[in-house]
Image (cartoon, rainbow, N blue to C red; front, side):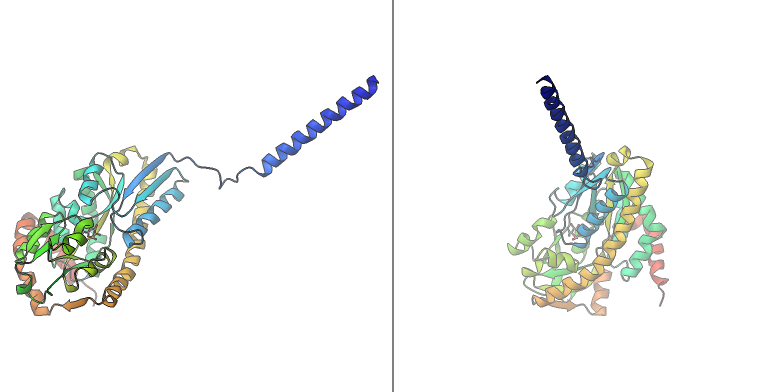
Amino acid sequence: MERKEHERKKNKTGIIAVSFILLMAAAFLLRPSKAEEEIVPEYVFSYAENQAQDYPTTLGAMKFAEMVEERTQGRIRILVYAEGSKGAEAEVIRQMKFGGVDFARVSLSQLAEYIPEMNVLQMPYLYTDSEHMWRVLDGEIGVSFLSLADEYDLVGLSWYDAGARNFYTANRPVTCLEDIEGMRIRVQESEMMADMVEALGANAVKIAYADVYSGIERGLVDGAENNWPSYESMKHDEVARYYTVDEHTRVPEMQICSGKTWEKLSGEDRDIILECARESALYERALWKEREDASKQTAILHGVTVIELSAEEKKRFQTAVQSVYEKYCGDQMEIIARIIDEGQDAPK
Ligand code: GCU
């Protein structure tokens, strides 16, 4: 009897032990793989972008975020807030001064409101073409202007492309200087852009990017000015059916980081961020070329009228804006001369 009881106990212990081993083995086999393990990032940063999800600058931002996360083994995660969900550009830049937003891609026009020396790089009819602008931005001048951002407690990371800007109007086409005279034209919240439009004889109305469509639709303005992708992406082609190609400005975009955020990072992380920013810029620039063309074709398909200014007429536009150079570049004429020089070096 006692022996039977002993046997029973022994068997029970055996079953428990085997079950335990099986359980442990199952747990081991079913454990999450390294890739599935939730990596808790050391930093989660925000990145503000005012364009749509499929826009070249947004795709560039996503690429940047992805590369940073990968190269820091998940220690730094960057969340991209597109479609202006962090606010209008002017507000984003203001917030960045205090570290309210960590990263952003902004138009130089907007940045120049805080760092006026930046205006030199977006002067009207300054670059002969895209290659000319990139020779300047990829060279010494571009590097020194990136570092100018520290004047506003920002770190300039890289340059993104935004092509050339042109006028577009709702009710009447602009074919010559006289046509634009007296028109109300939307400009960015930029003093220089307002002065440029006024020098052409129009009235400048400052409106944030997100409100341009309704501004034109409601007749608050007669037109606006922007590159092909913005015109098409924001559906401005629905309300402004005349697009006049005069390429009055090439306004590059800058990828920036808040100085407050930068202070938190180690030297190694800063290098990774700079490297990823530059690589993402090359990616964005390639996407830009395709999108510029595609947007133009889409707008034409939508039936907009494209007006090409004659060389003679363009010269009149150029002459009309000379006063803006005097006002904004008085003490920077040497840099202007260097930029113009770069254009003349163009390989034929
Ligand atoms: C471009 C630029 C935007 C800017 C906009 C504007 O689309 O990419 O960042 O806000 O111009 O005209 O306001």
